[in-house]
Image (cartoon, rainbow, N blue to C red; front, top):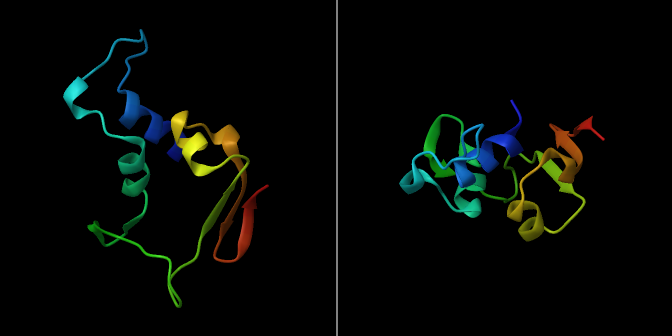
Length: 88
């Protein structure tokens, strides 16, 4: 699963032919990202950045605003999970 592709799908809601599917179900980019920041056992709560909280990290080649304007895995510079680099 590519979270960037999932976010793009939630934002654009395009069929393979390029038609919009469920126009009213599209979400803003900030909301699409927020869906991936949910607490795993309670998706209605969003995780926060604070001491003693899990700190997985995604470093981007561009500012977040630019990355969310056109979500793509190509924007990712590195992914760190549990203190270990999983993608670089």
